[in-house]
Image (tube, rainbow, N blue to C red):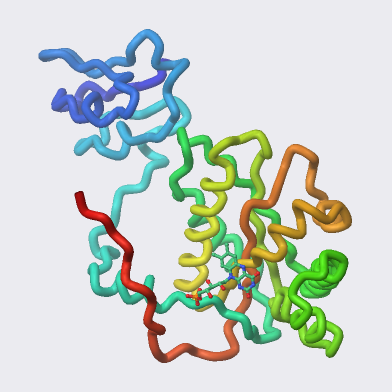
Length: 263
Ligand SMILES: Cc1cc2nc3c(=O)[nH]c(=O)nc-3n(C[C@H](O)[C@H](O)[C@H](O)COP(=O)(O)O)c2cc1C
């Protein structure tokens, strides 16, 4: 199959696909139909913009047929005010209900992260879900062990020794974003995907909290990498505790003003 297929009876030859292609891999001249450049097969990053932008759904990309690219639903648009409040009310949840989250809900939340941006559309994120609460507790214990060895945060260790899980906060599950160590943009791509996950989780009534401790410990304490089954060429670039929040926040805490330089 050619990289792009154009249904000629639908194509209006408006050239939008050629204009939108980030790598200028589509030519559309005069009355002709769009066609790929000679090097398109090699250079296309499969971002699908050409398919998504076509007003008549005339174009398919190899591996991205137009029938698989669902149309946007206008009735699901949200107002700027609703989005702003949604972003402001996201909190780091550190007190969870014991109730586990159904696998289907976790799957749906993770699925939303597929649309997070990634450098060159590589989509490098590999998710690791610690699903069983008992395993999350074991992991919290390993992190506490690492903290003790490194003499980090003595207050946390003291609380841990009193039986309070200040490490993974008694969360029933943990979701980590892993990426290949040699990928320059891996940490950024993972951080964006984790942020998508956090917001998608909130939309499903879930609470999350980043575990910077896990990310640090997983890179410096071998028993954790072993417990997680991390391969040598993979690292955790971000992780979230996840579960149903026990308490509901009712106000939006104030934050610093955005620091902006206008030039
Ligand atoms: C990269 C990163 C690592 C974090 N690590 C932890 C952590 O290990 N434990 C924790 O309780 N909170 C952690 N947090 C949550 C921050 O403390 C929290 O985002 C901040 O206090 C602001 O609160 P808010 O998220 O409710 O707005 C982390 C946040 C980020 C972005």
